Length: 257
Image (tube, one colour):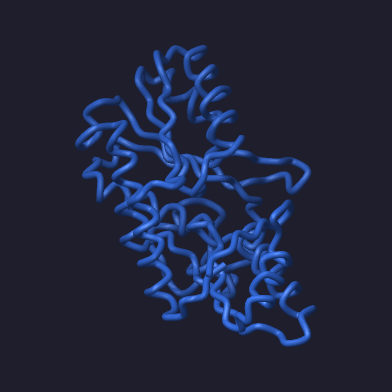
């Protein structure tokens, strides 16, 4: 039995749990649809799920599938989608921008339990180690490196940036900022730019409008010819199959939310 549960709208997580309860389901596998872990996204979703489960008299047994930022099935499915736009080894475009959703820098500092590793920039994200294993930025860079390797892209063929910053949530957000990078790439002579957003599994306003419309307008205004928005994984067959592999690798249970 599979149910969809949204964090902040309908159908919600509590409603999904109620459907499970009414059908006699006691074991639930929760799949946060965020490839990289962030306390503001995955953490918030898990918190809501735990609180909803705690209100049920016969509390269900929960298993949470961890972040899958480096899982071969996710990388394989997304690389397939990206390749349709950029061609083999990116030959159909001048450059690939991997734009991840942003988060306040403080969130990254908070995940460093040693208090010594995080430096607030990409220098501490060159590889996943014990100290940054739960760092959103480190996981984003690891995703980018592995996608680039799968796509056989040279280091100078792609750029990583972070979008959707909100000043109300913190003055300093992780850098570089996508809107600035889009203009910089155009000014450097990039004419045909492709952009993927690996932190989303489904297209939304932050992909379709922020990048597909505003980002494209900014790129052309700065001297570029075209910005190609690469679709998220959405409901592609390759991702549907890959998600099953991700779930199976995490937990053998067959009851999923």
